[in-house]
Length: 99
Ligand code: FES
Image (tube, rainbow, N blue to C red; front, side):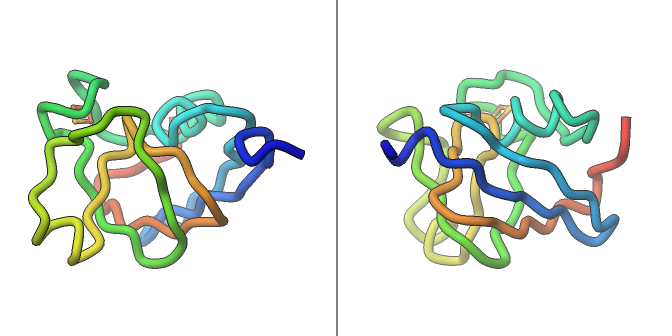
């Protein structure tokens, strides 16, 4: 099965919300489809409104240069609006809530 057709589970702490990410959806798109509200604004990886920390798992980006510094990437920060999971993921986003 091609990698981008796998379904992964995303969990968001500390509210402990969970949603599935199917196909080539970004974390933000999949959250919205599952009525999980994550902060967002530009939705194209530049404004950093959606910035949160990846506690576990891996993501890849839909754009070449998401608005993150190398240090932020090293510390596990991700931009869910342009990130697709490569595994099940756990995110730390204190502003997340059920819609
Ligand atoms: S919503 Fe702007 S960087 Fe993600």
